[in-house]
Image (cartoon, rainbow, N blue to C red):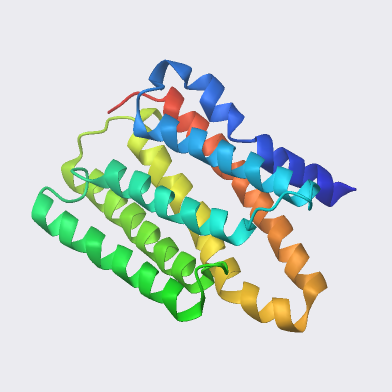
Amino acid sequence: MVEEIINDLSVISPLLPIVVGVKKYKTLLWLYALAGLLFDITMLISDKNRNIPVNIDVIANTFLLIEFFLISTYFKGKILSNKIVFYVLFVFCFSIFVALLAIRSPLVLNNYGAAFFNLVYIGYSIAGFYFILKRQEVLFLGRSEFFWFCAAILLYFTGNFLIFLSDAYFQQTNAVLQMRVWVFHNILNIMFSIMIAVALLAKNE
């Protein structure tokens, strides 16, 4: 019962940043929240109605690529001023994900590719914090959209990194523990949405 409530709250949690940040509907951050909501709803419908001929893992892999594009584009120019270097890194990371996807199967959740992307995002957030301190352009961190997004990324994807690394193992050895791990993921997702909402409410400093 509690797990179902947490799951449902996790699914609708992206609504919070979408609603509170509606004035920033043209920004990447708002579009990211919208993409997250559409993905969560699609996954929920597929899970509730098994008769729908949809491969959930394919949808998840597609979202992982969309997420990578949106997050990377958001950090472009904020942590790397050289566009050429950024695009080289972007193509490199994208290629690694596709290679890991091909090794297993495009029809199976790319756990290791997701974990790799999570490491990239953690790197983005740490670099973001570094440049916040180096440039010292932000007077009040609590009012900085970039600060809140970096904090949200670091919290959420550090937890996700561990989840994706352990998911395949638990799937084969302990299905009950695997389900509990994904409950933790849902809690992280709720916290992530709250922090994105705070970021959208903050000023662009």
